[in-house]
Amino acid sequence: MLTLITGGSKSGRSALGEKLLSQSAGEKIYIATMMPFGEEAARTIEHHRQIRSGKGFVTKEVYYDLHTADIPQKSSVLIEDAVNLLANEMFEKNEQDPVGKILSAVGDLAEKCGNVIVITSTVELDRADYTPEVKDYVRKLGAMGCELAAIADSVYETVFGIPVLVSGHVRT
Image (cartoon, rainbow, N blue to C red; front, side, top):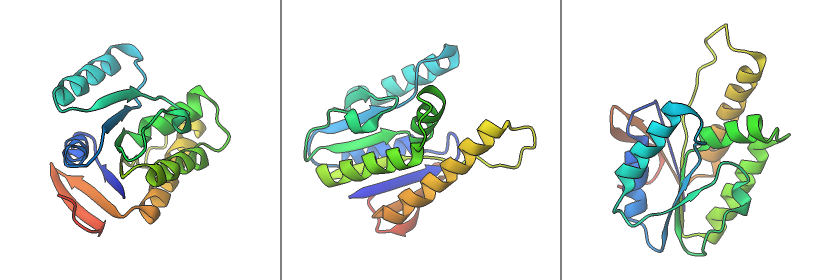
């Protein structure tokens, strides 16, 4: 089963993802994708570590090359989040087809595991001052979200902490 969760910043995406992971069968794998760069990232990472402490999740820090992550069969996986994963593939690895690479890895995990939950977000292209590289990233993030939604069993958008089922069947 593949579940996609989208929504704005601080909208409850992570809380919903962790709730669904907690309710899942098998070993619960939390894939953390935020690279520890700078003080703000370090604070965010520490905050997420505290929130998931004691929940029985096995955390794996995977910044790129998701397909190389050692994930046991029949486990449940939360990818937190695809936004960072795409940025890391594009700007750290200079991957030529980062969307295809991530979609392939997510598809492989969905076949291998009992449950995969992917958290993502959208970024609008309404700012004129974005660099061409950032505009390319934003377009790819949107395309990746569309592709993930097309293959997901359930798609949620979190709005002010409220999960709204967009497509598929309710999991909460």
